[in-house]
Length: 72
Image (cartoon, rainbow, N blue to C red; front, side, top):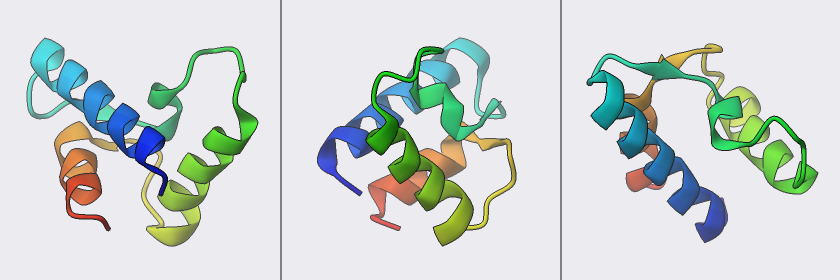
């Protein structure tokens, strides 16, 4: 995973956790605007989320943040 995506995921997770608490869930779409302005980055996130880790559609932000911080 490229550093740009890793930083974005951690930033979004921190923001969601701060706003809604440790139990907030999100999908990989949370890291992107409604407009698909970077399809390669979106596919990288989708591949990591769906193919590599076979995660459910919604996962706790805290879990995702930990996975990214640990280079999973």
